[in-house]
Image 1 (spheres, rainbow over the protein chains, first blue to last red):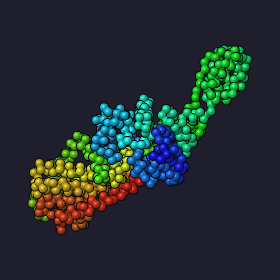
Image 2 (image 1 turned 45 degrees about the vertical axis):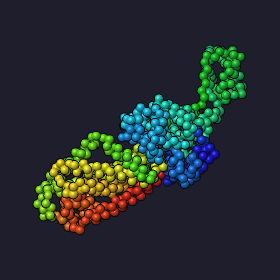
Image 3 (image 1 turned 30 degrees about the vertical axis):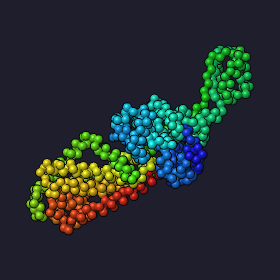
Image 4 (image 1 turned 180 degrees about the vertical axis):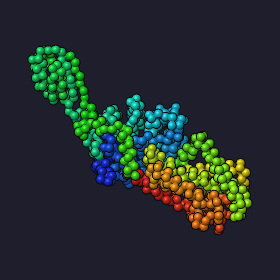
Length: 338
Length: 264
């Protein structure tokens, strides 16, 4: 693979009529990383993934996946990737093993090698026991696991997962995160994942790109993105003390170099600081110096939600509609297009 | 031959579905017997008319090729429905992201439908034998009947895939299928010899591929009896092959075009 980049895009654009779904997107995904594409429904995540897996043709720009151009070498790209779509696309009237058998053969695998690979991926997603049962009897989480196994059976270099935990319960979600981490750690797989869940991007991804209205607003590790917010939040509750002592404490705290903002409300102080780890000991020292006792102290790092808010001007959850209305909207859009 | 293997595995999945449901198997057996008994009994009073065009046997004996064709047509023309489901549930999209050829997807479906139609024809043939129908050409005839049924199914499976590809909703699919299904049966020699039809109707039947399949099957079940003027077995088979080829070309072309603009 060229220069250790699993996915490279430059100015990648997709227009549907007058609507620009993806606008001049440039990104790079390195080999062996879990790359998260974070954005609300309709931000252009799925459109981007569909271009990368060669299902739709870009209107402009270029994209290389596993070193191959998605427009000029689609067959090469398809051989190198696994694609797990947003719809859980498994065949209900086949058993789990039969599903994988068909998928393996469609990737030109055969015989003993395919059989061994099927056993291996079934084990990876803990579906061994259920492999002989009809998928119609599976729960949603099991279907998703089988679906992911199907994307792995031919040993792809890059796995594309479109909203892999949409509509699953919290337990199943964290189990699926475990499988995804395992794939990266044990097989060195590059994983490109789209999600509109903050916690998913935060817990799972090495790097995250925030996408909104078809454009990348920011891309970095979740840590750096949060750090770029500049400040952490601290709440201090004081034990009863004379007001003039509290005022003196506030004065001295305002003088601290890491202090961004301080609000006092009776015995409650809300601070916004640059470096929470160093600010807390300072707060204690200043309080002691001022003769005020601290009842409790708590701190909060900015979440990816705060980051998202800062970059897009709205929270992820505010877009309205549950995942079900989102699905219906997609369905409508799909029908309208065809 | 990786394209053949691709088609095989697309077909394998469909055939697996077919054999999976016991209730489905039972209902199909029953369906075959019902058609035969119903159609055979309703028209059983027409023996005299059939004699006038040179047919000596019972109406059951006459209708067996026609009912085989009906079973094949209905089975194959509905067969494209799975294409719609696959698209609805994202399975189609997933298949398109694999390295297989686009035409393998369409041809694999057609292969499966044709194979299943052969089985359906065999089931019906068994029911007919139980009702006392005699296959004039013997064991060779039985094999030939299955092959002719499969040949007929290829063309109609192609039509079904075309309709499923063009009609993007199941409502539209079903209304088109219902529009063409039964009329095709009536506008052929399946139920009645064209020589007994009004001349305009008889003329229409000669444009219906079904007419030639019925004639070929008659040649196997009731050798010596021809349903139409100037028909011979090679002509029947030749016309069916041309029909199949045309439908296969059209269906793979449309299917590939649809795959390209699938989501775009």
